[in-house]
Length: 234
Image 1 (cartoon, rainbow, N blue to C red):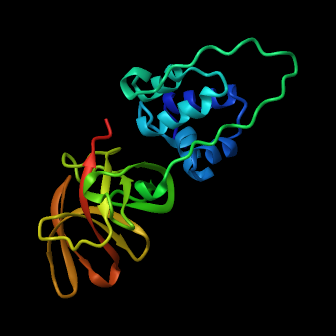
Image 2: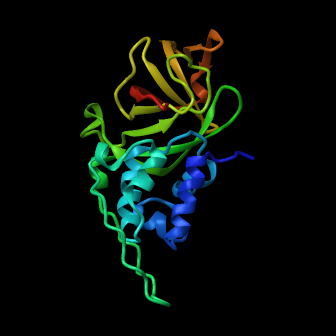
């Protein structure tokens, strides 16, 4: 069983302190329940994503929880990310009914879905195409329909891409020779590799750890996506 990080446990504690269920928090953040649960139950990195915690800070501010406590779980402060501090709430009267969580609004057409992934053997991962979060789009994908991001969960491409790094993926631009690509196979296993060449009946790819080249038959490939860039997960 995967043990969540201290930051994930801290997020759960703040949500419970605010009197919100997981479902209420997910709805307020515009996320699926599965996507939100990832950050409380399965997130292993020491700090939560800054973009997510800015929205959590806005959600919990209405419950009297200071943004500084929330953003500390992302390794930052309200001053650094432009979040206004909130005054401490007055003492609550006895049996005061809880208010509904404020809904944080954002335009998904201008944001990029991040798809979850789970380990599926030493050389691949399975992509869950239910977004676990939404992030600001990089300029290269600003107006690209169907673009998405995903996390790296294995080490076959280190040191280029490490576990926890986020990849930005273009859905339609054809990869060139020696491009880095995401290959989705017919069994829904996703591989992050470097494309050496495309042959009539196979794709020849390269990995860095351990270094090797090998061919993937085209009949086993459902989709081939170009990696446009990445964000360091550390």
